[in-house]
Length: 148
Image (tube, rainbow, N blue to C red; front, side, top):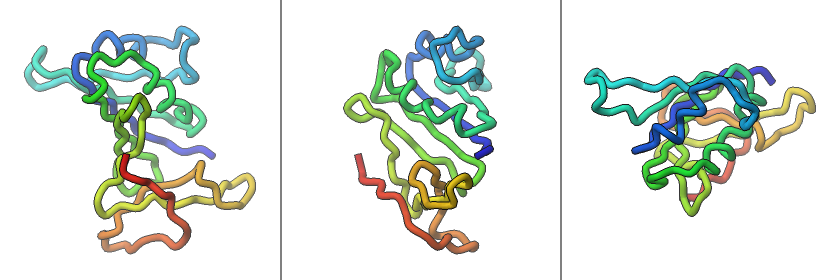
């Protein structure tokens, strides 16, 4: 399935951890996309964010596993936001007990999508939808997202 996704990583004191992800892949990660630092309007004062755009799901499918394995100096500050092209809004993942877990946001549901190859519902493919929007909500099963 060809889907674009925007990924933003926020983390305190993580310049050294994120530096390799801002350079060409040295073979240690399953994708070639580069993260770009998000700069503050006051240079040298903020710099806690990095952003990347992934053009296909399989390019970022292993991203969360890779990020959770990094040696974060302040793991409690790590936040990963992902907006897939089918999503209504960004989803939020945070580190809990060494694992990146999606944090359920108020008034959102993650809906199961159909795998275009098999035509069957697959929790591997889902999208995040606001439940309070004017467009209504899609029909179909939702993904259980317990509070971490």
